[in-house]
Length: 433
Image (cartoon, rainbow, N blue to C red):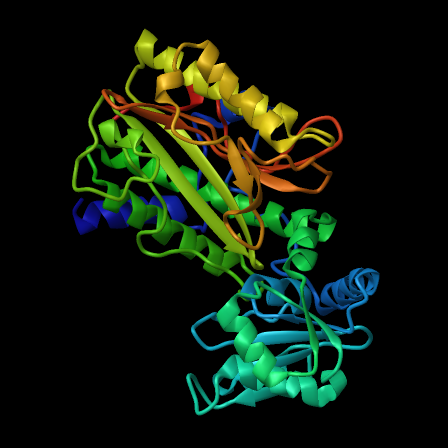
């Protein structure tokens, strides 16, 4: 696509930091009765959680620690450090840890390159080391300082106590009792409260926007390549977020080529990487994007048909959509994760397309794009309100292509709540080029 065409697209798409749903605005409403227009700004919700939320979370963690008779908990996993303290950072080979004592405020152990940034946040107690690897193993360094804070003979919970990690922990705090406790925070993360869901709800607006940006680019430009779609949508999303975000901490987008946008026979590859193929009539097109705002990931995937679908394509689409809708209906309190998966994928099996199944129904989503629990065979987790999942069953015919919608769904009492507002019905998924 030449630069003039691309500039015209971006000017019409985001010149006022908005995309327009014109001829499809009524169809959008028919799909879920929402009447959403991207003329509107994102919902007036926070971009990140406030310090007081993290203070409360530390208190909740300390209550859970008391049930296990833990004097302290040391977190090294970046998502868990962020979940408990809100300290966003770039996770590298340099260890960064949070110490949560049984009472009082947490402390951070950080590489020195974080020593100025950390002063901007509510956790004021920190110690820093110069860099990695250093003269002393940095994990040992952390636990030496934990021990020096009065926990030398304490009962300390840790994450992932592998033999190599335990060796360094024991060198740092030889008199402490080290207890595996990685599940304590991990399982707390499964259930999101209203504040977390509102962050995800705001992120979803931008996620839906990226789908429409990709669609409008294809419809305006015709026989484009996958990398062109990716770049146009990423640029449009970056422009919109730059205008509307109030606080960019913890925001993640993947410019310029983030996402998956396979079409034609390559859409039957669930994790296809971009090619130089050009879109043509009759192709399936999957637009698959995630957005991360305030640390929380959401995802939206939609399957489009370029031109009028034939009866076979309609039957594939109907099977995929039935599986998707069944999954959403059953993401409710008291259901078992693997049973939801079976009920969803059975819709594809009943339609005669079992041979085109390649993956589970969904996965947990939150501070990580993929996290437990799993809506999959073998996961016997009983669902609770506030859990959040992708719902993304797909059907993949290697001789033609694949179809997959993905929504981000909150487990509720009677059925799942879909955070996405982008339509899902076949009549809304046809693109003419």
